[in-house]
Every structure is written in structure tokens, then in C-alpha cells.
Amino acid sequence: MSSSRPHHMTDTHEVMNQPAPRGDLDLWEGDPALRDHAGAADGAHLGQYGRKIGRLAMREAAMEANRHPPEAQLFDTGGRRLDEVTYHPTYHMLMQAGLGAGYAALPWEGATGGHSTHAAMVYMTSQVEPGVCCPMTMTYAAVPALRASRPLFDEWVPKLTARLYDPAVAPLARKAAATLGMALTEKQGGSDLGGTTTTAVRDGDAYRLRGHKWFCSAPMSDGFVTLAQAPGGLTAFLVPRWPEGTRNNIHILRLKNKLGNRSNALAEIEYADALAYPLGDEGDGIRRVIKMIHHTRLDTALAPAGLMRAALGAAHHWCAHRSVAGAQLIDQPLMRSVLADLALDWEGALALGMAVARAFDGSGERDRAFARLGVALAKFLGNRLCPTVVGEAMECLGGMGYIEDTGLPLLYREAPLNSIWEGSGNVICLDILRTLRSVPAAGEVLSDMLAQVTGEYRRYDAALRAHMGRFPRLPEEGQARWYASSLATLLTASVLIRGAPPAIAEAYIATRLAGERGSVPGAIAGVDTAAILARLG
Ligand SMILES: Cc1cc2nc3c(=O)[nH]c(=O)nc-3n(C[C@H](O)[C@H](O)[C@H](O)COP(=O)(O)OP(=O)(O)OC[C@H]3O[C@@H](n4cnc5c(N)ncnc54)[C@H](O)[C@@H]3O)c2cc1C
Image (tube, rainbow, N blue to C red; front, side):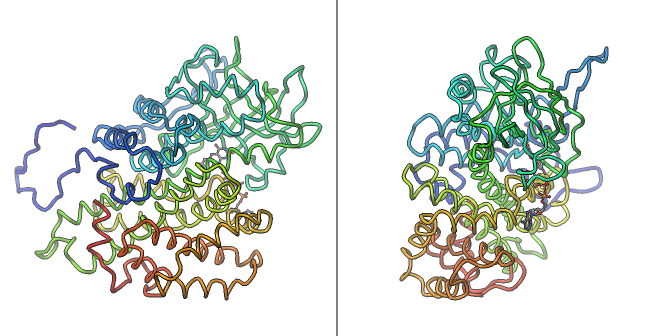
């Protein structure tokens, strides 16, 4: 957008009561809730990144990247296979901004709070352009999966964590940096990876894969972590995209036409005897890829908090500068109830996500156990709330919320996605039950966290007792959502009691645990709306 001011007068009327565009945003300084919940994250780094990624130019680039989705270039003019995808230049610029700032590298560089810093970057980047988060997140999360093979780890990890972005179509050795994707889902089922039909046969030190993957995001990644049936059972592999001197036999069939996440590509692919290297032993595949999925899940827990934050920031700005019937919307009691209620879901998701990221930064058994359980609880609850919060925030702008220029439609299209991938809602709830059954330390840490904050808020204590009364033991599968949402809400309240201003914790407990809320957003009373809205910056 040009820097010269637009005319307020058109030929026929003066433009009034239309809020001015928001200009540059500081996603760190302007977000007191993030700073409160960031824990050991690197505030100086986040300050720099938040200022950069929140600039108007970045947000405009994000819109551009979504207006010009990627295109498949399957063949060259002469009909020779290319199997490439071209992206808009703004997509590359945003990838450079994130990877260059250490999005994929920071947690593996050994500094204190690396996963927390990364998690806050996911939260901030999701506010601007969620599409690039997908390839950057997979690159971050691939590192633990590569630990299964020392040679592959040594060859790939320095390039994945180089704090650079290099989109060249070239073998790894000739690139300054690389990205990795994850191709697991096949046509017959994504939740049940045990049913994978792709086969792997030995070829010297490597293998040849034959089969398909029905969902493969970021197909221009330099390689994919994937699963195939080897003679010894389901096995994890790394499939390089551009081996030395040739293109691997990874054929892109077409790009899927998605609801949102439009700057990013999603391909259907076939492995036609594609070269692949094993990650761990034959038959150990699920255990290997779970290490990657565990880390992508952290990002799917923070992304909805970012989407909610972006939508609420836009709604708050609009209401502060728009009047209806002679009063600013932000001063109208019902609008305050709506915004405050939505803001509680956003801050709850942010606080819980960052608490889980702290466990990723820990190294003890209790941290590991809580990370596994907590990430599932946070992913489940945050993503259940996100579409409703974004949709309601959109309505706060009236008709303009439905218009692309405001950015709300981009957020709305993105809102359901983080619930679907990396374990859909039901799968996550069943995983929560499985973890509580198989990892006793997870339940112990959770119980301790919930118990440690009792005695401060009578209604929290009562809600905790009610939960334990309703679920004296793990429920049967049919009640897993009820159980998971109850537990995740209690855990969120406990995290807010620890880290948020008392008015926020009080309001969250009253409305989410003590029944002082109707069945639709905004149906609340008796909360300190001024304190809650102040969190929106
Ligand atoms: C935009 C996008 C990008 C994607 N990118 C990738 C990618 O890069 N790589 C990749 O591998 N995959 C990718 N996926 C696929 C995604 O991970 C899967 O769609 C997801 O895991 C669900 O698998 P499915 O579609 O086969 O559904 P199913 O496995 O058929 O599940 C359907 C529904 O049944 C539910 N369900 C499953 N089991 C149970 C049960 N026991 N009890 C009750 N309910 C159950 C699930 O929660 C889900 O709601 C992507 C998906 C999307 C939308």
C-alpha cells in the first residue's frame, strides 16, 4: 500500500466511521499476555521477531501469497518429468523470515527455553501467514526423528537448522539449508498408519519405495519422513527429493484444492521405486515417526492461539474505532461481553500452549511425561475453540469481517485445520486416555499441577472435585471428549491461576468451570471486561 494518505472525500460523500488500517504491529510488545506466559523464552529475540513479522509489509505479503497459490509444474515443455511446485515470491520471503530467525533451529541450538522461543514464534507467525508454518514446523520436528540414524542426522540436521532458507532444486550437499516434510497419510486411512500399503525393498544400503501418499504438504521440501512396509514390518524412511545427479522417483500427481492454508501446497504423490534411507530398524516405524509428530503437535497447539489472537486484535481495533448509534462499539456493554468472552479462550489457549512448551524444554522424566499428555490436551481444546472464536471475531467487524482485505477470511479458513492434522480431535482424545493408562508419570504430574493451585479460588477447587467425582477412573471411549475437555479446561485454569492477572483467572474459572456462562459466546456476566480487554493490547 502506498504511504501517501488516501482522500477522505469521494465524488459523492465523505468517508466516515471506517477504522483506519492498523499499520505496523509489534507482536511482542503489543501482546502483554504473550510476555506474561513466555516463561524462559528468549524475550529479546522474540521482541525483534515480533516487530519484524508484524509489519504491515509482512501482512500484505501474506495476503499476496494467499492470493497466488502454488502451481504444479509436473513436466517441462518437452514432456520430461519435473515434479516441481512453484510458489509466489512472497511465500519464499516469509519462509526466509521465519527460518532465518531460527524457527526450525532454535530448539536444537542448546539455549535455555529454545522450544518456548520456537512456540512463541509459531504463535506470532500464525497471526501473519499460517501457510508457511507448515513446512517450517515439519523441518523443526524432523530433527528428533533423524536421531534414529547417525549418518542421516549428521548429513541433514546442520542444513535443517542452518537459520537459512534455500529453495534451490539441488542435492543436499550443494544447498546452504534444507527443509523436510512428512508424508504418511494414504488413501485408505491417515489415523490408522498401521494400514500403510507402500512397500519397501532393499537396494544395497538403501531401499526402494513403491506406493502412494494421499496428503503430502510442502512437496518442494528437500525430503520427506515417510512410512513403508519393509520385510520386517512398518518402517520409517527418509526419502530425499533431489539425490546427487538425478531426481528421485517421487511423482506429484496433482495439488489438492484446499479450503485454506492456500499459500502452501498440498500434493498427492506416488513413490515409483523411490530411493529411501531407513530411520531405525525395520518394524520400528510408528515409534520413529511419533517422535516427529510429538513435535508438530506442539505447533498445532500454539497456532490456534495465534489465529485467535490475530482475529481478536482485528476485532478489538475495529470496535475501538467504529461507532454505532452514537457510541463506540468498544464501549457498548454487549460487545464488551462478546470480546471479553472470546479473549478468555484465546489467553487460555496461549497460556496452556506455552506451559506445554516449557515441558518440551525440560529434560527429566516428569517433563517428558507431561509434554506428551499436555500437548494433546492443548491441541484438543485450543483447536475446538478456534473456529468459533475466529468466526465471532469476524462478526464484530460486521459485514467488513467477511471481506478478504480485512484478513479475517484468511484466518477463518485456517481455523479448523490444526485440529485435523497431526491427530484429529477424536484420535487425540483417545491418545490422552492411552497416555494416562501407559505413562503413570503423566497422570501424576497432571494431578500435581491441578492440586498445587487449590486453596486460592473456591470455585476452581469445587470444579476439580466435581471432575474427580464424575471421572473416578478413566472413562470408556465414548466419553473421551467430555473427559479431555474437562481436564484441559481445568489445566488451563490452573495455568492461568499461576501466570495471568487475577481478574483473568477469576473470569475464566467463573465462566468455564463454575457455570456462569450461557451456551453461546458472549453469554456471560459479572466479569471484569476492562481487565480482560486490556490483554488485547
Ligand atoms: C491441509 C492438509 C494438509 C495435510 N498434510 C499432510 C502431510 O503433509 N502429511 C501427511 O501425512 N498427512 C497430511 N494431512 C492428512 C492428515 O494428517 C489426515 O487427514 C488426518 O490424519 C486424518 O486422517 P484421514 O483423513 O485418513 O481420516 P480418518 O483416519 O479416516 O479419520 C476420519 C475421522 O475419524 C476419526 N477417528 C479416527 N479413529 C477414530 C476412533 N477410533 N474413534 C473415533 N473416531 C475416530 C478421526 O478423528 C477423524 O475425525 C493433511 C491434511 C490436510 C487437511
